[in-house]
Image (cartoon, rainbow, N blue to C red; front, side, top):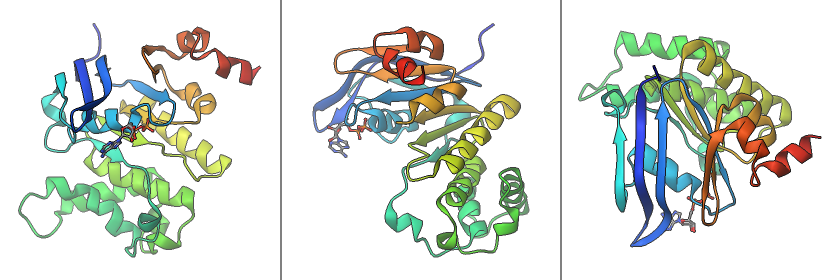
Length: 237
Ligand code: ADP
């Protein structure tokens, strides 16, 4: 039996102001998947993530989301802007803010939410940084903090947009290891947009390549054998 479906896109078109960026896309994301979304700049990767998150309604077709993902229960790591890197809050405040969706009308975080934040900081090895100011951290530490924040919201799916941009190779490697751990040991589905295909393909099981006029969606091995993916195999040789 196949794992349960989390998000199903059926013949979906997405875009802005009547202009389509993506058309006729079929895609199923299941529990425990590890999907890398790749394609040229401007091909529509971030637009697709917005659609998957429910932030952008399809112009055509349907994006079905499992009940467990409604009410914001998806961990989302957006691309970081310069202003966000300078955010003047402590690490624990940033991580706890990931619980905002579950706070409802209450003004304070519950004990359970604080425990969840502490647990996620522990999981990502940033517990000792909890009282430090977020903006004083290295890029790699900041990404761990944002990932811990995303995990506070995530029940079964993490969506990441270019998570290793600006990280040095060691910090990037570190982040991939954490993602593989979360995917393999905790069953967290991971959907990631990335430029760093060569490394990302080691963890990803499925690849969606958004081309100019077609899509490739298949296993990482099939992607490397496909016309679109072949160049990454040659790079590796
Ligand atoms: P990618 O993430 O693959 O680089 P994007 O999804 O960001 O691509 O962008 C796809 C296309 O949609 C681009 O042509 C971009 O200019 C356009 N676009 C992105 N965001 C908006 C927006 N908010 N309003 C109008 N057009 C947009």
